[in-house]
Length: 189
Ligand SMILES: [Zn+2]
Figure 1 (cartoon, rainbow, N blue to C red):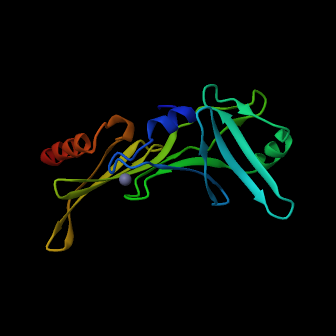
Figure 2 (figure 1 turned 30 degrees about the vertical axis):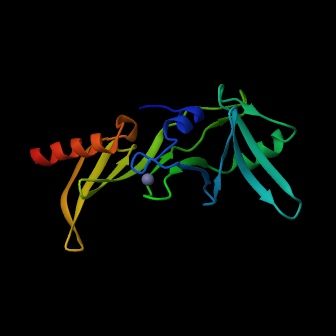
Figure 3 (figure 1 turned 180 degrees about the horizontal axis):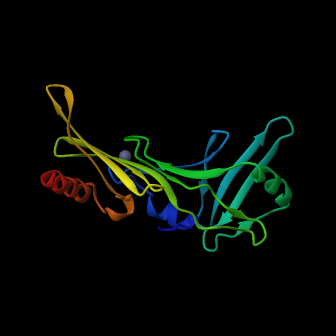
């Protein structure tokens, strides 16, 4: 399965496939908190924790070129914070709610780098020729659910649904290409 570095990931999905608007990149933890990451030319900064009582701000910085961690003097605090938690990244479009989510990050504190990761789940929502398509991919099971809805007299009618082997977003350059592929599937069913 395709593996991503953090740099691949931010470069791969800078804009939404459907809306062509800038995507939002957030880090999620098993505490269900969502924080926007900071993307600079050289690094990605993950804000880990903000403790207002003792004003501890932990920023975990990862170099884009090498995947290496950049520490100031807070390595031990970052290690402690990360140790018992799981982190993963989500990129999403605020307009159409298309998103991709990564597998859980594996931080290597012996070599101080972030191991390449996979995508775990993805939902693409596209509008094409008066229909709405929902493409929901589960990378664990390597399967994709596809639904095509068409609005007729103000009601959404399910025109077509199927389950196919994985249709990852990185295979599609445009929403038209994906919609046309789905139309072919529809003809064969
Ligand atoms: Zn969108």
